[in-house]
Image 1 (spheres, rainbow, N blue to C red):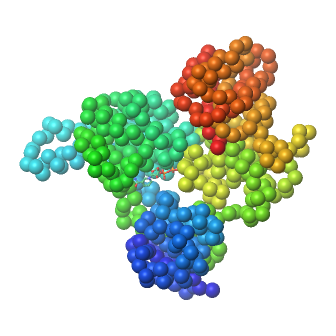
Image 2: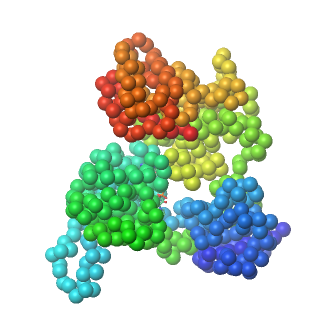
Image 3: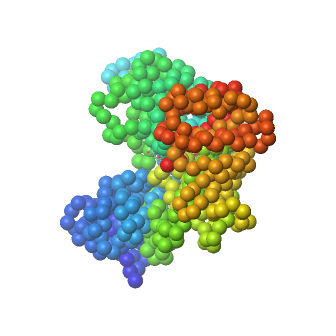
Length: 530
Ligand code: NAD
């Protein structure tokens, strides 16, 4: 059988080479995806390759009855209705790594340009000035570069920083100590990194935990001699607070490639802020990156059409719908345990073991992917992780995964255990599914607990002394937080104890700080499980 692949959005021609020279593939190019020729081609297309201009909607899919695969030459898939594709059995691929080096080089260009005030100096020469003293810069050699997020792009920036003789500070709670060492960096808590670094470069995804990460307070921790670079995602930095800090001379300089809303609003305070370099989201805009992402995704489309290989797809279900329906509540519990494990992890994760006891012989084949999905979503972002790619993503991050059949318990219900190895010590979670639909968290690091793994879960470690529950309850009550369930567990009288508290509604960050300040509390963590 032969297949037609429709290419649109001016994709790099060189990048299409994986589709060339194959008699079973016919490639058709129509750059204008609103025109009649494109829509006519669409009716016969088996594959569709695009960038960000074409929107894959329910309506477009209705006009593409033979479509089996969509390939996005780039990372973001905001222009593709993935759920609609899944409903129609269309696999979706993207190219998550093709622009890593280009993005890292742009970040480094911004670091250098900010340190040497290159854009402002250029503007000054163009208006007839020759003012060398105003543009005195700083050397990078010997300075501390603070990397917030050190995955693919942060890692490449780290290598370049080392070549410039910089010292590396890293804040990335999800990295193992081994990876931090490999990068030649020293681990820091975020606030310490911000206080210490001479240059700060952000390389995190936009997730619940990174939105507004550099807020007004955190920006105030930076030294007045520090430069800040953001080529990751808009929304990570409070733009108004940054503009104010620059206007008031509380920062030496900053450079941004990404914005909370793009294109940047005409009246954004950033446009008039001093010592600030602005570029219009150019991280992936190089010939090489465009070619590489096109080639990566063309390769994936080719393998999907010719060999049925859906391994890297963002959406294709890994097991049949009937299995998913039967195991649904168990898989949901697995995702919640994964999410809880990453919130409780005291260091970067290097191994995950998933155990199961129950009647479903096929459960252990699918449970690990769902645990990993829960575990990686807060780390990499909701749009990057799914059931199909979770195992590959874990492998890429050096996380080993194993499974174990558990001996049947005397307790009723099916059981899922998750053991996570981290550089700061292990985390172990025990979940039970009672009846068909009642998930419970029944064990946490060897403590017997019994709470629903839903809503806002607060996990406190404390010394087993009188009055703790009262003080915690008073503090939560004063903050207007309603306790749905409170389970206090201890191993021995007067020793270490643990409380699992389920709360209604969102949890304000300052309450966690107040709890951590109570003398009996040794650790306080909170996780949103819904
Ligand atoms: P990646 O997933 O390889 O790395 C992201 C890292 O951030 C991971 O190591 C993760 O552990 C870490 N992280 C997650 N949450 C964190 C938190 N709360 N605090 C600290 N670290 C946290 O991603 P990548 O490919 O390196 O991309 C990084 C960012 O760059 C993404 O936001 C991506 O969208 C963006 N990007 C921008 C451009 C551009 O044109 N400017 C181009 C490509 C990618």
